[in-house]
View 1 (tube, rainbow, N blue to C red):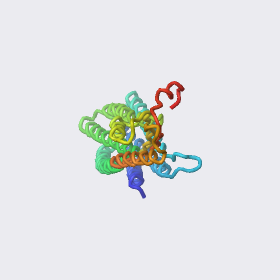
View 2: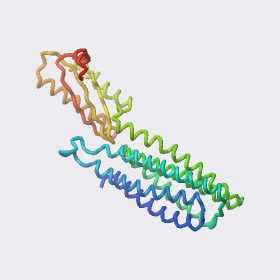
View 3: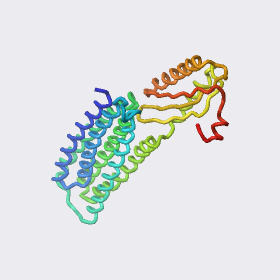
View 4: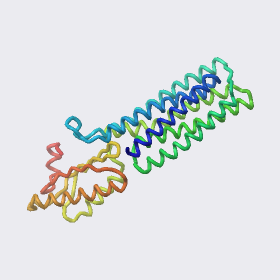
Amino acid sequence: MRLEKKATVVSTSVATLLTIIKLTVGIFSGSVAILASAIDSLLDLTVSLFNYFALHKAEQDPDEKFHFGKSKLEPLAAVIEGTIISMSALFILYEALMKITHSHKIEMLTESMGVMIVSIVITALLVAFLNYVAKKTNNMVIKADALHYKTDLFSNTAVLVAIAAVYYTGITLIDPVLGIFISIYMIYSAYPIMKEGILMLLDVAIPKEEIAMIEEILKNEKDINGYHYLKTRAAGSNVFISVHIVFTPDIKLYDAHLIGDKIEAKIRKAFEKIEKKAHILIHLDPYDDTEINEEEDFF
């Protein structure tokens, strides 16, 4: 099993445990902050299960129906995860506003604080593990999952502070007010996850530094006269590159093809160093046909 899939199994198990604990204590205590955290953990469980499914499908080889594979399931999973986080944040916001307009009493404060301390410790260990996997694999889904659980870590800490404040001051209004701040923070955290996923689904170009890396290889290749129409996109950890390279009119197709293969190998090796798989399509031009193609509006 790939490390990324193992990470989703671990996060699913942790989310299941935290959901059961928080939901039980939240219902009996009446704390909106703990209930909000329990709902968030339940959504974490759903997202982690979906992430496992997405990674399983994304790693499948291309077939007759999906010629480029299913790697776009990774950014799709990130968008869905961000959407779920935002929807849960809106629900928490609604519950907090209801608690403000209708006063409530929080019970089992000592038990509630104990639950949140356990949650913080477990979540911190999970975040450290997911960050390790994300750094090692550069996988977009795991990065989103790590960021998601990091927001949980902050919100759990905030919930603990709120419960402690209610315990020592007796001011129950602290609980729903903190719930509002948690919901706002969750929406704020979900935005970059959704943005990156949507841009990747729209075939946004790869980062400028990676494009510069490709251009450096092309510019240093002495066997070509130039290049144009460099296009890039990404799907998860897969990078798709197309480019026209220019030769002299009298070059043999066999020789041009060998040079193209050499360039492909250099680009592929460069991306392997940053834990990405490059898929390269090179068009061999016997001369610079940029102006002709632009006039015909055809690349």
